[in-house]
Length: 401
Image (cartoon, rainbow, N blue to C red; front, side, top):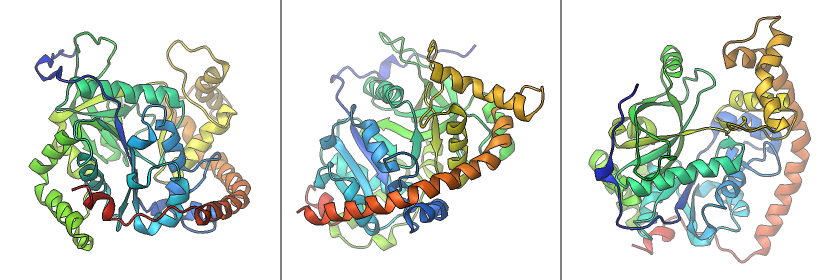
């Protein structure tokens, strides 16, 4: 039994719970999915702007997912200058001053710091939710509940950074893993399930990933909640040169080519495990669409569910749709593996993903390619008919400092 540690000394009672801000990261180049987006859109566009499944791009789906929790005036979106033609038609309901334009992609570290410095200039005491824009997430109401739990947690423990942790379905070496430490006991909030973080592993070996999965480690979803001033303080302790370099670039409006690339998870989160909390996510299907294989795996599960969306059944749920999904692994195991029931989720994934999913992916590409070009033409017409100006990358931040 794990020891239970009370952190009542860190609980904040100085201000009430505030609605959070959102910082949406949409500055990646998505090079590993360019072959897929080229087939759908006719050009190798970044994946977050492509409508791979459904009628929304990954960016549009991310913005819609968080809207009931975070209003548009509190939503900031980090994009790259070279992507503006694609991004702006999908950001028409975001205030112009909330579109933060980077001159180029320097990985997740500079992207988060770039947005963080802008946010702190506006309202440093407000919690912020960081949301990647290249994830597939189903059961959006349940997802928002987990985000809200993390926000409440950060309000009560303002020196901590809360991460949403996903229960692994396979030993995936391309993800980050969070080893939960002692569970938290929050006075007056017994329903708030969370743990401290024992260790943080970024992209472990296959063998270590298998061990971490068996031991109860969680995938790092990279969805995190924190107080901006606290994160900035930790960054200044660990990566002060990078923070000051970006401050200088923002003030001068030049010199971004000299900003070094660094990864927020590998180069920062792994070094501050004692400052992290993890909120386990249940009742949500999540996939990081960083590779074509990840997209194929999601499409295979969609095919098994027989619907255009899916999510694992929450505890106590009785809907036929959720039951169908839960039964899918054993059913496919009986058909493809004889009478033996699979003991691991990857057993039935291997039997279906790289066969039927590749054909399914081709079908999706074929049916969506023509629709995409029509939507692109409509977006260009909409953009040209508006009087919205393209925000220069430096003015959105410099003017407020």
